[in-house]
Length: 155
Length: 155
Image (cartoon, each protein chain N blue to C red):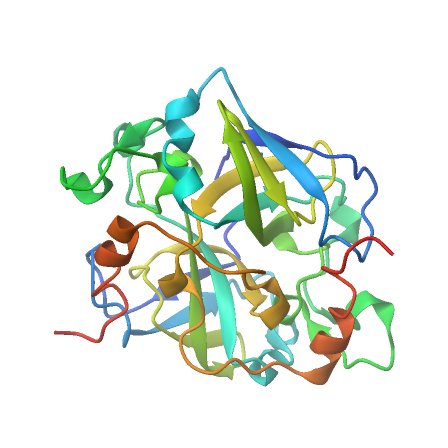
């Protein structure tokens, strides 16, 4: 299947780092050859959006199809690629829920997007409460530990 | 960019309908030519997963790049395609947070997946609390009204 980026991330963050994404303000510039401000009409009525993007710096050789220790940490259990959110995954798709910081024409400003400058964006969806998890959320301790500083502000 | 499905949805639901997805139990069958049970190792430690899929029944002509009334309802405001979650969108990507109902080999059972039988799956990610919205969620009234019966059990 073939997909075309709908826009591109513009951010001061250029290196894929593991943590401290919480305060990062990034812009998503829609492809103006295909979109007008109409594509974002009414988005400012939502507080958050889900951004679907591509970890474009990940090479074929970095892609894991089986299991590995998250972040290579051997004290955390060997875990399937679909049971972790690491970037070296089939299709290299990233997904993040960001706070909307503003819409201006075909440019969207978001807070806490864990994607670097130049990242191709595949989709933008408004966050609706009803699309959150239904029922109680449960996750293993290693995942909670891994996320400790992920969305924290810059150290 | 080229993507390859990592698996396929198997469900009793074959028609794209607007509502009553809450109790639907569906299976995602991984492509066994590329994946072993290792790919799902440890997923059962999570209560929920996010499923990234393709609305494969949507044709090129159904894709909206500007604004429209959600579900064609003229009493709801004209809204950009990236400010709604309708299926006729660029790249036709769907995204849903589902309760995990079981893992068996290369087959994953989920509850409440709003995708029909035969849907190609692009990615499966465990849901982590920290990836939920940070800060208070706000959404327009039309979105809340639209979602009223979406994840309700079958009428």
